[in-house]
Image 1 (tube, protein in one colour):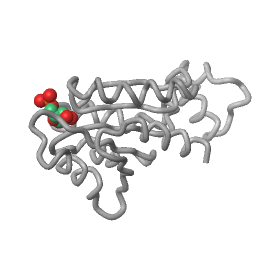
Image 2 (image 1 turned 120 degrees about the horizontal axis):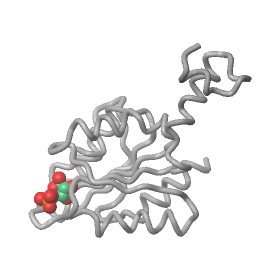
Image 3 (image 1 turned 180 degrees about the horizontal axis):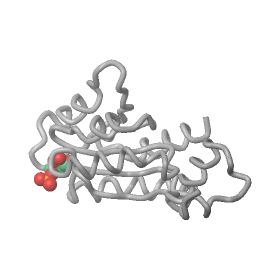
Length: 162
Ligand code: RP5
């Protein structure tokens, strides 16, 4: 047994228990919902999702990562989300809003997309809404209304409690 594995509780002799114990080490301090967004400029909108989750007693974390500007960060975050204990990821983005789909490409956790308006949006955010909703079969992303991060938080709670 390696030093790393000897730190695993003695009752964790099977593979499943060992994996569970190692995943525990990656635990995100009880965070259940990850909130990500494509730009710092999305923060005023997406903070409302965090505030709603916090109001409902659901631990969350909030991070900026762009599908186009930081693709490797998005992939790493998404791939490790389940092992860290997250249950749902909320992803907000505007314009060619690839972030929710990019996250869903790397995790089987439920992903809720929030289409956002920004200063160069066209059709009042319809650009982002279509980019988020029109995912290919087999890689679903839930899509709430334009600039409606509160509904993403409420839906995340319902998913967690389903
Ligand atoms: C999207 O482009 C972001 O999600 C944001 O809504 C929009 C504008 O980004 P910035 O130019 O303000 O960084 O990727």
